[in-house]
Amino acid sequence: MKKLINDPKNVVDEAARGIEAAHGDLVEVFYDPIYIVRKGAPVQGKVALVSGGGSGHEPLHGGFVGFGMLDAAVPGPVFTSPTPDPIVAATKAVDGGAGVLHIVKNYTGDVLNFETAADLASAEDIEVRSVIINDDVAVKDSLYTAGRRGVAGTVLVEKIAGASAERLDDLDTVASIAQRVNDQTRSMGVALTPCVVPHAGEPSFTLADDEIEIGIGIHGEPGRERIKLEPADAIVDRLLGPILEDLPFASGDKVLLFVNGMGGTPQIELYIVFRRAAEVLKEKGIDVTRSLVGNFVTSLEMQGASITVLKLDDELTELWDAPVQTAALRWGR
Image (cartoon, rainbow, N blue to C red):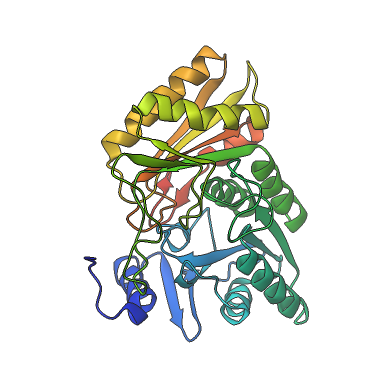
């Protein structure tokens, strides 16, 4: 194993200090307990958005703290949920009097700890709502979750709900929009190689040189099937078929197509994936009106990709296009 780290026990803390050093104009980082907040928080009269989860998926979530997205992110240990204490601290730090929305990926630890934190914050008269992200169509239950996993669709929820909050929608509206994005989003991924958790020092699973895992989770959880490596177009077809069938998507739909890298995949390969996915959607009469390509929800250095499709309407398109200024996503400002 080769990693650019010092002590494995200090990976999250040192990375957070790096985020603060690089993006001090956008965020402020607290360390006891650890959480990242938008510079100038709280914003009075605005619904605050808080998300988080295990580290190792960067830029999710700390890279999406800032104008038009999250007000706070709570990083847990690598691939491990943060405890309720930092979630409560972050929630209190960004509450501007209009309530707080927790955006939670559907993993058992995340769900339980955010629920506990919401209860504790409510006891201090902070109104908290939650939306559970479960966009992964690959499997219903996995090693870490009951029900579908929350994966790359989380970015779309954070961006669109963040724009809703930025225009000063009330808590009910922001929560409803976040839920709508989740309900209209489907994702599925593939792994070409495993990843290595720093404190473990060895791959989290094994794949032969000629094998890939279809439907992998962002922690290396098993997917639908393990097959021999195929050309990119065949892999895209395997991922996109279940996505389109699940909502289902139909001719005439307008969609956002998001191809996400898992951390170790070159951008050139992600564009090859996007090209094929866009071709298939066009053949089915589905209009790709918005796009996103890059490494946004990663699994350390895993080679692989995921495809996410969001069914758009006029309001969701407007909110996607709204200005955003974070470390990892920025336009229009």
